[in-house]
Structures are given as structure tokens and as C-alpha cells.
Image (cartoon, rainbow, N blue to C red; front, side, top):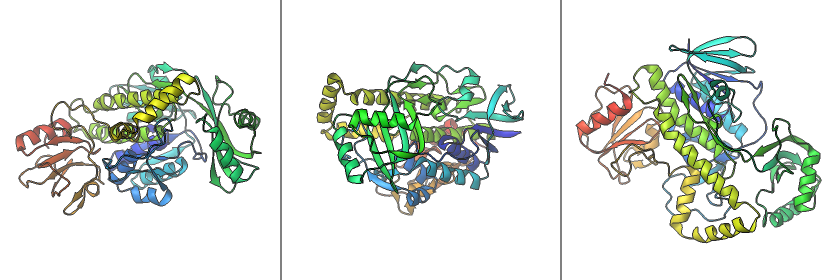
Length: 474
């Protein structure tokens, strides 16, 4: 029997596969598409996702294939510089096309021993007390202990489970594609600059070799987004908003997306779970979707591995929903707000001008930046130290730096006292006696996802924290 079947080979599913393999979980990824997508839906990684890659020793691969951009201008396109002293050692956005992110994560998952099967479509599933049966389009039946749907906004897994997906339907459609243009780059830049003074849902960005990423509001809202728009529709809408179609031709791919906002009522149904777009969809403003999915996988991976490994404390797997559902709900809210601020109507534009003034206050700007890049997330672990529930940024230690100690995906006790012990939990938690000027607490216990589970110097309190997150002593 397979331990975990992951349905969907996008960034969420591939990240989850790699996280599970760190703990020796037998993983099979099923992807219905025969070949990786060549088109670019998402353009980069935000701070928290960059930190996630650093925590697992993957960041150098991503940096070699991407480009750093300064933070700022992400909240509804309001161009404000990043605040000083942002709580991270990675205060930038990493521009990297989604196909490259997918490739790097697939390589990582495969290196760790995950199996990825392309051209295999899930059409049915059932579960019992011992496992899940997955039925594929070719008639094959597979058996696993758990199954995770990472299969996008029109998730088959979610539909088969009968999980409700409440929210709002799309009110505005947008055309997105890659194509060549027939006018000089200076002409494109000048026209786009003028149009974006009043419409931030419009843009043409160069990809090189005469190819541009084209974004333009659609004529209306369609029922079936699986049918791609035509090049003629792009030309027509470009003329509507800019007075020219830029001579676009030779499209690589054409698509449309809406601003529907929906969230699954529950992320777990027995032995089946949902992650990424299968659990939540929202407008792409702020570039949060891919990042939110990667961070779902980072939260779920070690918890599901603990369940498979038999050491998960009671309620650990359910904490995936408890922690991640509110995070996604907040993203849905901030994208709703941003879409209102992108409106060309007088009322929203007045609110936009007011918010722009407020963002000149550094704390307002900081709050919104931290929300978009997800370093402001704090899980509710109850009362206690201000660090509790937050992820810890990379800090310099006497012998290296924090994130270098987290590559294997285990818990970590970073101990400046030298008096503490993780006896009984050695296989699940690493104990490192080290510290530095940036670590202003005696000791800190980190979960495998880098969130602070305990702070202090009392051994009995530490044992309580270890039991809560890492099960009974072995």
C-alpha cells in the first residue's frame, strides 16, 4: 500500500511530496497532464516562500534561476517602498516563472524518492477506516493510507468528497496570454504607462525575443473558462483599452481568469485532505496564490508524515485545517479589498487615494507588506511569549545560521543554556546548543515548519511542548 497519494503535480503537490519524503513516507504524485505546462501563470516567490526554500536547502537552486526584485507596490499596485528593517533576511521578491518553480520542485521530490506519474487522471475515490481507494481514468485502482487533493480550483478530489466551496462567483474576467507584438518596445512601454494611470488590470511585459505577457480586462464573464479566448478577442480588448492592438500575433498560449473568491468548508475529510487552489481560490492580485499553496504544503507535510509514522499527538493532523483555513480566509479578504481598489469607479478610487496616503506611515505600509508576503502569519497556540506561533526568521548563530539547521525537516531545539534535553524525542527533534546576539531568548523549540512551539528555559515546560507537538517520548 502507498502511504500517500497526491493528486496534482503543481507546486503545492510537488512541495508536499518532497516534505513527506524527508520523513520516509512512500509518495505517489498523480498528474493528469502528460507534459509539464509551458505557460507562465505565476511569476515569483514572496518572502515566506523564499524562506521555506532556504529552510530546506533549496534556495540556491531558485536564486540561480530567478531574479531578485525590491519589495513594494504589491498591495493593489500602490507603489510604496518596502519599510526598513523588515523581519526577514530575504527582503525581496524572487522573479521566477512558474514552470521553472515546478521543474525545481519536481527535481527535488524525485531526488528524495517520490514517484511522479504524468498522464494519470483521478476519476473516483472512496475511503474506509484503513485507507483510500483511488480510481483512475484507465480503470486502474490504487490503494493508499491517505490522499491529498492538490488539483487546482476545479478540484476533482474536492468534488468527489462533496466538500462545499462557498464564496462569490467571478464578477470580472481578465485575459492572459503570451504572444509576439508588431511594434517597437518603446511604443509598447509608452502606451502601457499611459493606460495604467487609470487601469491597473492592463499590462504588456516583455519576456524576451519579442514575446510579451499580455494582461487585459475581458469583455465580460464567461461560464466555461476551460475554453481559451481567441487572439481576435485579445486584439479587440487591447483596442478598447489602449486604442491599439500592438500588432499582436503568434500566441504561445491564451487563457482567461476570473476574480471568483471561494474557500473549502473543510480541509480534511477522514483520510483525504485538500491543499492549494483545491482548498481556496481568489483573484491573483498581490501574487499570493502559488505562495499560499506552497505554504499549505509546508504546514501539512510534517503533520501527515507524523500520522503515517505513528507518532502524531492527538489533533495534530486536524491542526492543518485549524491553522491554514484562517490564513487563506485572510488572503481571500485582502484580495477582495485589492480588487475593489483596482476599480475605475469614483468611490473606490477615492478610497485608493486615501489608502495611498495612509501607506506613507511606515507601520501601515509594513502591516500590508507583511500580509502579502506572509511573514505576519501567527498561528494561535494560546497565550505566552510574543514569538509563540510565529515563524522565526533566519538568525545568525555562533556556528552558522538558523536555517542551515532545518534542512532535514525535523523539529529543532535551539538552546543557549546548554541545560536542556530532548531525550526521548531525538529522532524527531534536533538539539543544538548554540546562540548569538540575534537570539534574545534562552531557548526556542521550532516545529519542522519553522514556527515557534515553545520559548523558555524550564525543562518540564519543554517536555510539555515536546509532547504537544511531537507525541509521546519514544
